[in-house]
Length: 486
Ligand SMILES: [Fe+2]
Picture 1 (cartoon, protein in one colour):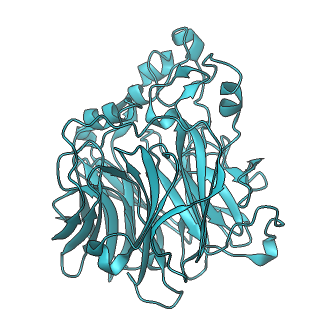
Picture 2 (cartoon, rainbow, N blue to C red):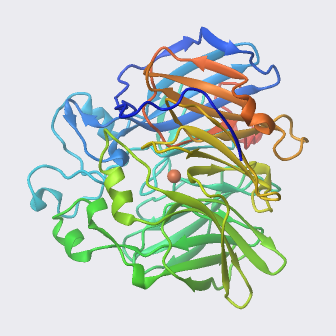
């Protein structure tokens, strides 16, 4: 392994990665170390909870913060920064009140079970962004997407694809794209009237078509999926609601989930062309994120980040002001036609936020990019790249830092896999400021090509997307006929 490092993490440093950012900025970034690649033009969008509070009242779970979008506009010479909160009812309420009015994923409304009975969690629009057909959507897995103006980040309202989403409108936070057709695939966990996984395809023209509706009476919770040329692939871990706790509303939704190891995990392969889903049983796994999936002959191959301890994982989410990532591993699962599952550990490091060259979606990918740690820290401070052909790991250790999901941007549409840049947000803990960092994906160990310093921090967040379209506040919104997907 080759991992270059900067300064080592300081022992016992209390990080402030979840401090709120209450100001909405709009400025040209002045402090830029290194050189901006002149061919790297477009807009990077990142999202995460910007504040975990209603007025001055603090919320307890990292999933319960109001969604805040960060926009970095790159024209090859300059970096422009803008951030805006998604104007959800929860956000609007918290601007004028200190009273918790909406139930969260991990936050109860004060007043005991009666105050929470039959209340679904509020849509925080804080988990991921999708740029599809010229539209920018803020995603949250149990509710409808919010449409945002990709230039100004103004909230345009909830979006239900002309009424085609399921009853509750759930549209998960991890859509996937077919690189050939440009179609976006996604699912929603529809809890009412009967629990099911609804699978969707969204054409480049933004028209949504329901693909399948798979009954799921055991109600397992699921965050992500992967796409192959023929299937939508789900890995359904035995994370199930305790019906007594849910029914009586005595606990938050997070605290009502149990990990039932004996039940095992199911690989669910839903045919994209319709037909009966295939189910393969396996020992219990625990994960949030998949990297990619592909077909290798008659086998299906799936990569994911596996955790081992549910209690640690849940406790990490319930400590909003001190988020921490338990130990994990990047794993590969090969499913044979007979239903045999072959498991392989891909690297001996704790990792999260797996990314790859999206042009390899549905196809075998050679490289995975992740956040990770090579020394004991509560959060990740290293960007890693694993070469699945050689098994080698490269990376760069940012030391006294908290590193966010690395997104790969190819140098041009025709360059090969890994020929491009990694873009990530890095929170420098001592300075309490965040940076947009650009690295050469093929030379991670040389460190950043560019470090654009913000004048403030960006709270610990989740996911994002990049488009070569350069945001221009005041420009007319893209029309359906323009059909860009990235
Ligand atoms: Fe996620």
